[in-house]
Length: 253
Image 1 (cartoon, rainbow, N blue to C red):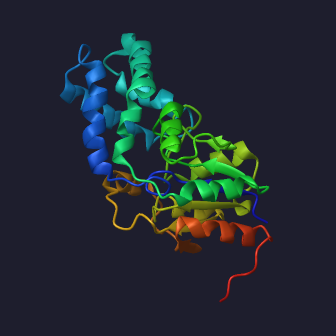
Image 2: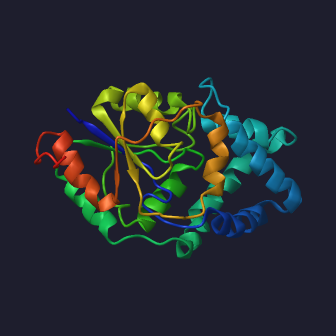
């Protein structure tokens, strides 16, 4: 019986070109650090810190791993550097809202799901702080809704496509993977969870969206990625969830 549904965020609930998004994001955040390091140094450190998260092994939080890498030459400024990252996400990050598009069906999907006895998890790759995750949920039109878990850089110790990331979620929400459904657009980062027995639903709404940066994580995935158990539009997922919960009519073969 289905008891929890995990949702990816980027190009599942909000749609955008990752390349264009980061071309605007990087200059904005690097401007917060110009008195500490040149822009090119900042960008290299940001990339190194983010890549280090893909190798995090659970011994420390993703935030600690990121800062350890990013602040390797500026350890004495560690608290100040984290404060500046936090300030950017609190004050500037929301300006990137114009870079994304959202289907009007997203909010309806989640309003229908909040009426059901199923745990809801935002399982977005946790390279962002909670403030950024909440901003993006707001862009999706669901920032005011309640979730049982939102993964972010401070409350996780692994990243997609590591299976440990999904196992960490299952421990946090106290559900076995066999009682969960993963809903996402990435054929590797999201569908990989089938290896631990979780059902998968591949969202096809994003079409040919540029997801080059997400794909850069695929090298850390298992060699074989199972085909999704289900696929279709985000709007169709509620009927599937009802079926898996034993509430809906079985779909025709």
